[in-house]
Length: 97
Image (cartoon, rainbow, N blue to C red):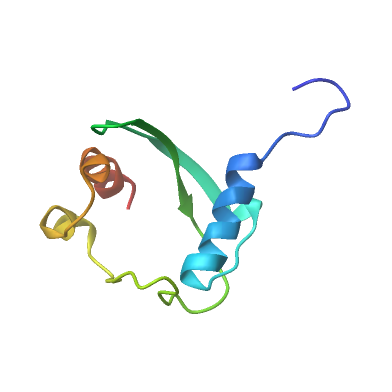
């Protein structure tokens, strides 16, 4: 960080915006904890995505873009449908949760 220059929270700001748009919840940068990165090679691009834990939010989680949601226990994550990029995150999430 350069002296006198505020930290750039672009990833956190984008996540906060997406959580509101897609799940109808509001949160703040201070409620987000960086967890790891998801890295996966798809046929036509390579995904490198920061993963955050959201420790606190306001509102009730509800799908706004037609997605199917379910609360799942950490030990049951492997039995839940998910994109291939998310599968390597299961051990990290189980340990963290």
